[in-house]
Length: 187
Image 1 (cartoon, rainbow, N blue to C red):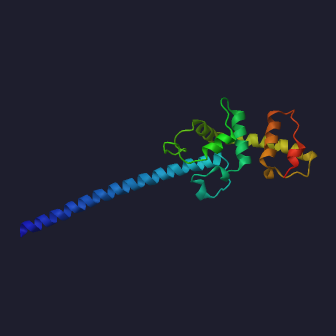
Image 2: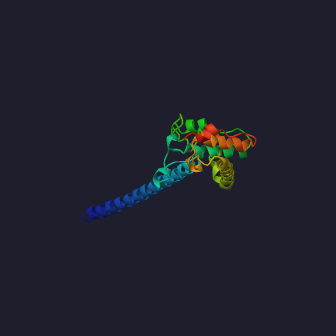
């Protein structure tokens, strides 16, 4: 009887130890998964901001966002600043569109984590160059204000479409360029 009681107590102690080990391991795994999801969310938030995400709500910013959710005018300004202020291979809107066409690479890995070095270089540059981007934006705005002085009926700067923004960028890159009234007056 005493022996059965000792065996029963030993089984209870071993069960408690095994349960404790399982709980600690499960909690550690859960925390690792949460940390990985948090890191991934930060990568997406950074990327979405660099691509000119339209929806600025906190929830969507931490998730994969497709190209159609991006503000093309803002993205064009960002990419133009990048291309103007960096040497090497230029980035295009089509490359960003292709990159955002799928969340995953052909091998199943997430694009935000692996591959597309040109895109990753741009996103990192964007994060480190907010002041330069703002200066570029300010220069475009100055060009717009000067144009608007002679054309007071055109829309405000934030209401411009992509073709109108492209006109301003061309003027920035080539000061002797004559901005097209036809493009600027279109709505």
